[in-house]
Structure formats: structure tokens, C-alpha cells
Amino acid sequence: MKQPAVYLLASQRNGTLYTGVTSNLPQRIWQHRNDVTEGFTREHQVHLLIFYELHATMEHAIAREKRIKNWNRAWKLKLIEDQNPNWTDLYPSIL
Image (cartoon, rainbow, N blue to C red; front, side, top):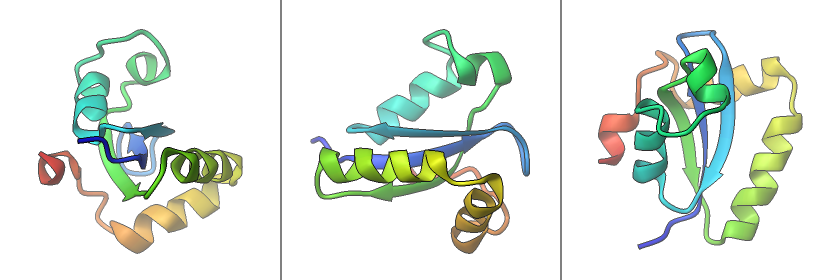
């Protein structure tokens, strides 16, 4: 079953952030955590799922991802800390 989602990964608390979009959140986060593809998250060891939100359509998810990517860092930190103040790795909760 496909479920569009926007997600944020971190290297550690207040570390490097990555914003992404997917239709299969568990699979995509597994790929990041296991360095399946080359790129930013592998290079910077950005593997902790610290925020995600589900969307009704992929179009909505993509639009939200683009908005978040344009935010400054302080806004992203507020988004994370409003939902996940301890920066808990949420990956186990989506399996």
C-alpha cells in the first residue's frame, strides 16, 4: 500500500538535516539507514528519522517537501521539536 509522506532525517540531535518525500516510508528509511544509494545521506551519515507526516496524495506531499526545503534551519528545528522534543528515532514506530 502506498502512503505519501514527507520526512526529516538527522545525523544526530541538532546535526545535519535531510528532507525527503516518498510513497513508502518504511522502505525509504531502510534504504537511507543501510546506505543503499550514494548521496547526501550516505556521505553525511544522516540516518535518524526524527519527523514525518502522511499526506493524502503525492502531489500534496511533494508540495509540502518543497516548502520545508525552503525554510530556514530554525523553522525546521521548531517543526521537529514541536512533534519530537527528544529527537527520538521514529523508525521503529513505523515498522
